[in-house]
Length: 210
Image (cartoon, rainbow, N blue to C red):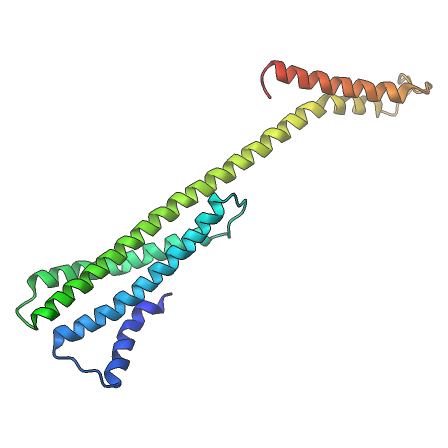
């Protein structure tokens, strides 16, 4: 990713080596901006495609998203914007104050290249905003899932608390525990534990905790 925009100068060098000629400085600048704009557009298109695939998965009901995928897209777009924002300002100033050098077609071509450059940076900004909103959506869903799991865990813990108390009492290895000599004691204890669990559940229902 990093070397694609930088390779614009190398692509221009190879074109000159292969015999491409330019009428003047403005034509040379236009060619350089075209190579750079095309490389930057490819990066933006690739980032947008990756983001759209992630969006399709998230809003299609996928429970998990590749860890760091959205963050990498946001980092890439932010990095490219910071890197090329000064060049965008310089090119706009250059186009307004360009002396009468070159042909009219070359001036129009320069305007087209600057417009392409501006549109690509705007697209990167849109992709970054979409990635940020998508990251917030993913975080919100994960937080909701965590809260739901903790809610069910809390209900289960509350239901099992009286049962745990009963098992703790009858688990004490001391003399005088009731039911130690009765054949039906185990069934009575199990029934009592089930009854306590049901009563706890009904109490929570009456208090609208569940």
